[in-house]
Image 1 (cartoon, helix red, strand yellow):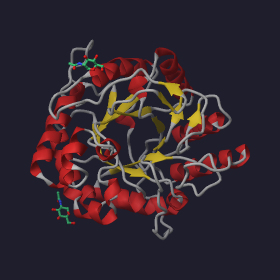
Image 2 (image 1 turned 180 degrees about the vertical axis):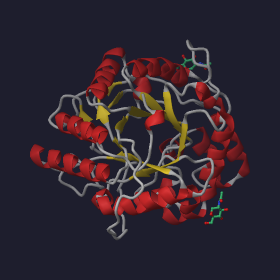
Image 3 (image 1 turned 90 degrees about the vertical axis):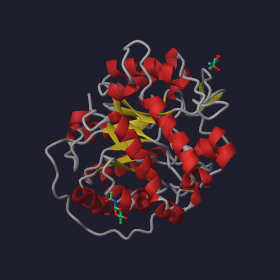
Image 4 (image 1 turned 120 degrees about the vertical axis):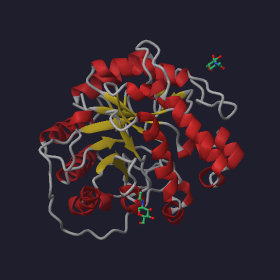
Length: 365
Ligand SMILES: *[C@@H]1O[C@H](CO)[C@@H](O)[C@H](O)[C@H]1NC(C)=O
Ligand SMILES: *[C@@H]1O[C@H](CO)[C@@H](O)[C@H](O)[C@H]1NC(C)=O
């Protein structure tokens, strides 16, 4: 997720059947970029809620957070590299050590996003030095960023005593960065596809080939931007992440065209970010507005989740939150217990009963 407009995909839908579906069923998960900042009561609410919905994976971020996020008070923590590139403050990793044990006891694994374009653009240590262009194009920041990825993968769990790269019972997947290059535009992303595969090569070289942990891309603005040809043929990438908030990209036949491409390339697809806007604006442009009536929003959630599930692609909602939704900022969130929560629970349960185009069963609890 980034701030600003999520564009509609221009992709014309083509009717294609779901071929090659494996015997495995689908599943659903959720996102929470400030998971490492939850106090115990909020963490319990979140994990109990995700478990009650059968949501199997939670995607978490490493960027520092503070104050209150989406109505939830945050136990503050700094960026992994708060002051200087290469000088790590492991607070966020230590917090997630504890979090992943609790998640595991709820039948939930973590997808760990190791940096975000959001932090880069907001001027973290990389952003200050390199901006959003040199960061992706120059050899020095690439090597420095690879060292960060290696640091995370080799982080020794505080109580389990093993590095994260060996914790396939707790960790579903790693990705280098949320929405790499997203603010640079589609052409820039197309021109710099190698950055993603180079980072995946780094991650895979640390994980090894039989880690039981997936390497995923981290998504872009919409479907066609998220699925780039050189990622489909990048050996080190296991999964291509789709992020989209445009309703055209929720159409089953449109998704199936990408499913076929991925299957032919031997890759998996994951609809890693989507959501239903709380307001009556275009779904991909949701900063504020008039609230939709509850029936309409719930119908949107139910319909779009069902369409993605029907294409055989697992999905993660942006976001399930542990507090009542204050409806500030871009608002796709669903608070546990609020008026749309039972709709999302039902959508998740339906995913678990539906056939998937990709077999993720070996990676789930
Ligand atoms: C890491 O950050 C925490 C929280 O801000 C702080 O208390 C601690 O001193 C920092 N550790 C190092 C090694 O800088
Ligand atoms: C993937 O395909 C592109 C051309 O589309 C090519 O330049 C690149 O080398 C290929 N990568 C691999 C890993 O095969």
